[in-house]
Amino acid sequence: MGVYAYNSLKDNIDSIKTPQKDLRASFLKKSMVLTLKRFILFKEEDRIYTILISLSIIILGAIFCNLNGLSSFLLIFLETNQNTLPLFFRLLSKISFILNFFTFFIIVETIVRILYKKNENTLRFLISFALIQFPMIFYLIIHTIFEFTELISINVFNFTDNILMIIFQVWSLWLLSYSLYVKKGLKIENGFIIALLLHMLPFTLIMLTFI
Image (tube, rainbow, N blue to C red; front, top):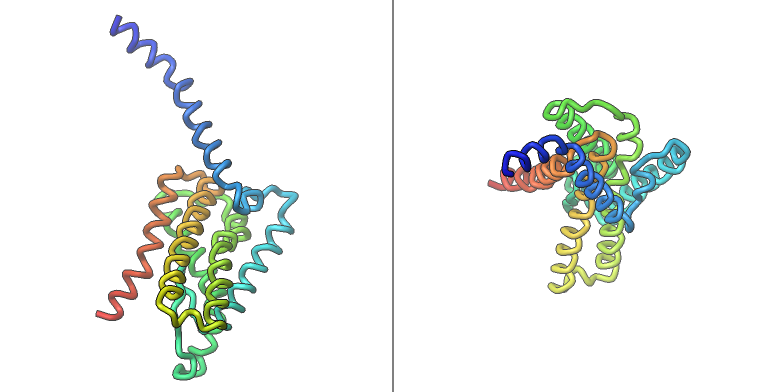
């Protein structure tokens, strides 16, 4: 009986694996209800809309970073006193969100190519890559409101601001994982590994800077 059960399991392993894969894919799709899933999937008929939305995210990010005197590095924002910076670095700071977009993309694409040997859909990945930072626009809007109303100087609002940044960062990391799943064919757990590495990288660099 045991041998029969083993042989039956061995002969039907493909049919057992397939429903699990479909279930996982179905779960991923359902969990993207509140996101720009349609444009991350990048259907050909949505190309122009994806480009326009991506450009809007980059432009809005750059505007809000300038309004708040923030510099962008991956998914974190650092306050910079631009008055004390040399002119060249002041200009870089003003376009840091745009520069960060390309830096972020190059880092992710390089990791995927080196570790997982995935080099397909590079152009599509680039065109829709700004959608990953879509949640951070919400954070920047809220942070701007706190700054302009001077609520940020109150401890509870400052704490809330930090918590919101973490929440929106997690949302962005999820979008990155899903985008790698869709565009590069990575397993979702591999996408999470890359996302977490990129999340820890800026904090590590900041800590090393102040040591």
